[in-house]
Image (cartoon, rainbow, N blue to C red; front, side):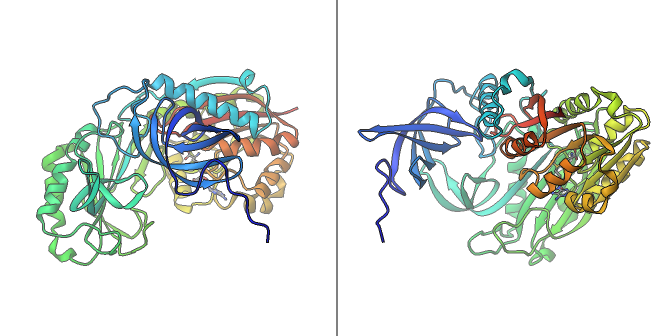
Length: 484
Ligand SMILES: C[S@@+](CC[C@H](N)C(=O)[O-])C[C@H]1O[C@@H](n2cnc3c(N)ncnc32)[C@H](O)[C@@H]1O
């Protein structure tokens, strides 16, 4: 067998000091190394242009390598100090927001050029929509308990009771959140250390990842910006539950947060997998109520612990307004017609379109049955008529309903991060709509789908970007496609 040629630039697991020169889509810093063979690109996630970093090569090909950040040796001169605790969920918090916007815009548009083959994407650019709150914008957080913590001074792991976020890239190690991270509710996060102390003093054990044992697992909090209430969910295992007084814990939360406490739920989760999600398991109400109400564009939405809801509601209002503007720009393709809201979740966009149009019938489809139940409830609560919701896979739904082909003029698409499955996209194309408004939380898959849509005769008319998650690499896009 011929021997594989060695990469002349890097070796796997090699540790290098790298100067970050550029920013690539998805929050990857770009470093280059040069030698007599030429120059070679290394991507290092969670880094910024101008930083000097220590990183370890994890993957390499002939063209480029990917490395894992070990440490920042020298900050970028662009970085500024912020009064918040550094957490893995906000890797760009030290970069001024205007620069974050610039990097997000340039890297997203370049994807549409490269993957979507839209050469004139800059000419089609409509608006960069900023988040109304740059800090403290989230309405949900999940904190984890861990029996293994991190000693920030000696940079090693220690056995201790922690409550906060995991260390970046280390699934079994927790890191105490001592104060406000700048992303969620300040009063709550400034008090998380008191909740940790309360739990520690019970003598019960936090979850130990490698041993897969312990009592305290997660603490999940949802916030309503309409009412300022907080809804809590404590997740524990069942073992030792008889030794923990849930009512006393609820009283302690009321002592800390007063009338802001909407309710406390308790979830028993005995699954031992590393990827257990915080809300799986059996859930029961300990105190107060199990839902909070949020308002979006004048409509009310009841949110339970498990239901999907936009994480930055103030920015979601601006996102939805943009989607609805694009949909209603040509009202003749909406009024007195059937509009499809595919991947509709809790049906928010369809409800807004229905409330602003004349005699339009909206068909919402989503695969999650509980989201469809919420969608129906919300439409009833808001007294909006003309909506039909179906719990189904979009591809299967369109197979079962060929009668919609050539009857739909406008479609709203808002798929999950994976984008639209190629076969499903072909079924959507077969509907032969004049206009599609495609919302995406992952422009990389949207750029891929753009190529298929272009081949089917759809052209991008406009694109807007919405910065729903400041200080992260995430960006949402709203694209209007029209058939020639
Ligand atoms: C980004 S969310 C949509 C949010 C929605 N527009 C809202 O405002 O509530 C993506 C949705 O796609 C749904 N989904 C994922 N795969 C699906 C499929 N194959 N068929 C139907 N829905 C699907 C998910 O359940 C999720 O609710």
